[in-house]
Length: 396
Image (cartoon, rainbow, N blue to C red; front, side, top):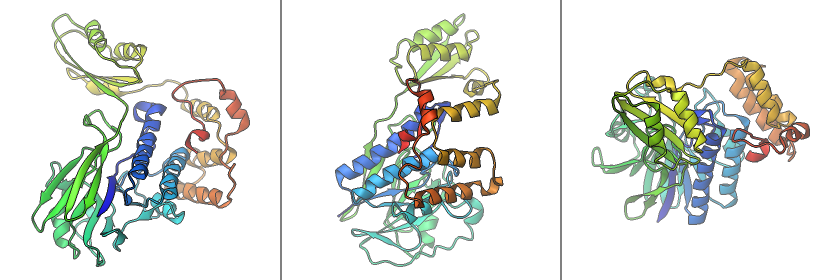
């Protein structure tokens, strides 16, 4: 029997709603996955793509990922993964860096055997490249065979690529496809072109208000057959407040509805329908945050709901960024990498590769203090509080 923890769509670095606390939530969720894997003694963690939210993750997000992967490595739990569409670069991937450090294995056409399962990988494939795709998977000899890949596959709803086509074209007969990209968990058993299980593990944190189901991952057990078991993860509370306004009702009615919920530290999503008068989103958002909500967002379905999603600042952006960088307590090494990204010391097309080379060089120096916060900057923020305050120590 082989037990695989199937996760994906961790989207590390996503600063949802422009809140630093939400960025930390995504890392915390990935860390909880690792904790579960270690405590449960699974045979491997398989990640089905979109480890990062962006192809140019910040240094803090890279170091956060390395910390979690290091915990798995110390516990002897292999981490095997493929590249999703959010993080994909033209050439060398961040996953390759982690593999070179012995923290991960990038799955591909050659089988990686875990217990009695041969695992293969197929990175996200854009539509324009699918017709000419060669399904050149090398044969293995394990009792079970699984493909890890990323994309929206039919026969699930909204699929733009038929998983049955992938199974039919592949010389290897897969027992299961462990999928990423769809943030809601789904599982199907199909019989054409042969019997196989298709399963999405879902995301580990809510990347949008549309993701109302519990977040989590799959435990896939290969024994006499394939058994997919769903496991939930604790996550920040999302409170959904529906308000149907009658004639003459407005902001005060919306406030009354919010008052009926416990919104402490929650993300509050207010949806307004019906008739009623004008509701100013800013007033509602301020009221929610006065009640202790992390963030409040208003979707007025009656008109121009999208306007409530905009955060507008009239401050000089360069001054604001410089001030924020000064508050972060970055080391000299981290500030140099930040300047590479933000100040465009190299051409845009080469930024990601330049940062990756910079990280590799710093890690090769084997100086444990290379990313320590600058003392002066750290002192400036000592004693201050706020959910947006971050130092490198938080991610090391």
